[in-house]
Image 1 (cartoon, rainbow, N blue to C red):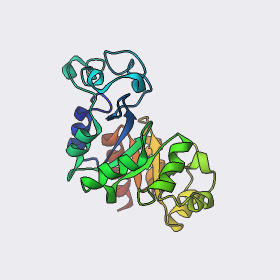
Image 2: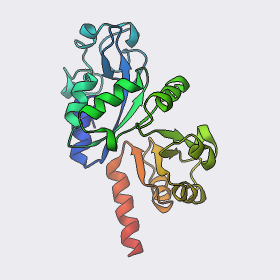
Image 3: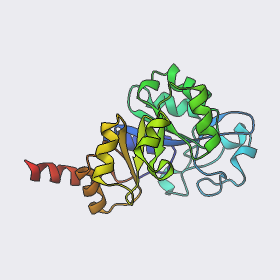
Length: 226
């Protein structure tokens, strides 16, 4: 509905009634934190180059909307502080850290009253280790495809366990909840059968693009059960 990792996409999520927003965090060459996914700016802006090599004044000038639709021309790569200000009091936050100090991210969330409902994850193993060691009060998510068992997720003191369509079973979802974990599922598509499976498994949080389709499926299953 809107270009990813922008204030426009945040507003679209809030308008849809999403309960949380997932975003990615990177750091500029001069140490400013931004909301951006890729290691380069080429795909989602009118610029080129590695994100970590760019100064903040250069990033601030990039157009992050036109690639998606000309209606979003002039949309910027948001600084993390601006993005979090727009979230405060309105929506919970799922901060995926691509390249940033987790302690700095944690403190930025805390200052805005967002920490208690926030959680984090990183595909970078060193960042995951830093998060466990430096900010244990920052709720952490792990992937089932990484940990392999419910027991391993518990041993890592995880708070949230994320499944994918190919590893979600009712038995695993039940076991995760019984172990005190919050269950989450990531799915980037719009296959109603996948959404139906998630609902039947009792998944508590959905990390998805197509919120509207998911809610239709959920409502249909609830109506059928009644």
